Length: 331
Length: 275
Image 1 (tube, rainbow over the protein chains, first blue to last red):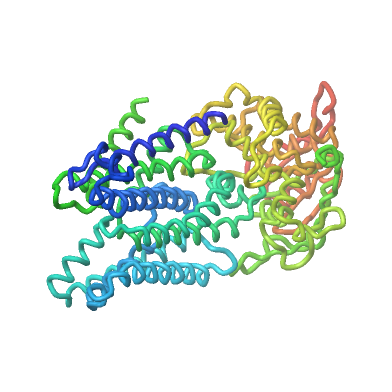
Image 2 (cartoon, rainbow over the protein chains, first blue to last red; image 1 turned 30 degrees about the vertical axis):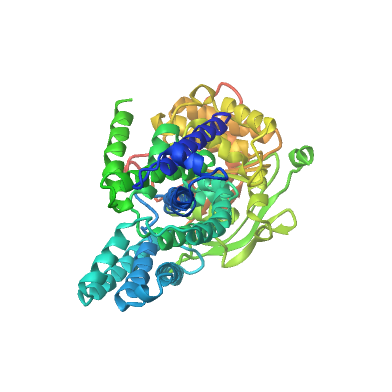
């Protein structure tokens, strides 16, 4: 048991290093020294504004989005008892994308940019309610997770069709920005979207973390969990709502950044096992560190242009994960 | 609080329990009454599909009866919250599986769930209870191994250890001996007998009529959802009753001894046509 705090402290140090790395590098070429000096009273105002208005909010948003995706991915894997589950498996991202693409294609997003995250968030919450409603009607009295996964995938497919429908009638410029949004990127980061995500993440994250022991029980099956004293239906509903809200807020702020929520929990599992008391907080911290680094890379490789962060997470994440998987097989 | 809990010896009673699965034509359990009493080992026997597992699920609140009621002492079972119930009843279900591997100690530690708040850390007492449960079920040496690496018998013992870690006064087991070899089957029934001696109320579902006859205080014979016979093993295990229930020719012989079980009725099924 004493291994858990040690591991979490280790990850927290990694997060700090990754944050420092993320803040220190960017397209403007200002290095750590320049930024440090900018903070002093007679510092360069441009450097100061780059630090406070661009790099810090962006790093903070990357950290929160990565953490939210790692934590919610781990939660969906526990809830659905399925190692292939990830934050977007139940259609939340599809709903968010419908909301975002509708805002973009209708042209409202150009006039009022703040409607983009709002549209995405509302779409995500609508998807979440719809999937839950279908699953509860199909399995009255108890939320059958097999029905939940089925209704999530089917409703997600419907949303994808809606997106394609909207894109097929969109003009070239909207088409491009909609696709760019769906690839996931953090370029829209400001303190407002970061604060919104933080406000949702704190209660939802605490709710999920309080269920860590119950998730351990749930992994042995619902009947066993019931016998061991877990309130199975309440645990499942809380996990679904809290994790979906986290995803909705993350997607609204940063688009559909893939892969973090799938590979981060599995990387932690492979390294340290499946006790959710360690796994949940470790997935949060590892997701934070991973997205901080991936986003920094996304900003640097083709500077002054940027890659979508979601492209980097997949391109860097897959080989890393395959290596981890093969190392696990040898052991 | 914990001292009181250990002296608490409630009786689990089911009265007139009836349950039909949705869309099933016949009830799986029909008007069954029974009590699981402290210091007694009750064996529920009967053919496949007789309703034994359904009966266990009714007794443990996993299913709600359509008629009848389950009470823990004087309280209806469904009035207890989930953690309270798990501190009173420990259950070893027939089988389980998990997509995520855990170690034996982690799994046995799950038995402490009902004793711990969501933010409460596992304490010295919890760890001691877990270690004791590991030892009693002879899996202490395997504690740090992955559950999936163990043999079927070892895994079964780890599951029983988890139930013991719940420190519940009532223990219910669904075919715990399936997959166990001769020695561990005997060890298991010895353990159940020992727990009974400590004042636990034990219910075991089993297909092993011979061990049930030797170790159980009382037998309940289920046939197509009904309790057709109940009482001491000698009274329940008659050739007529068993042949009718199992629809198979058989003979009963007395256990040859030596020892405590001398004379206990042992069932020997015959070949199909050797009536």
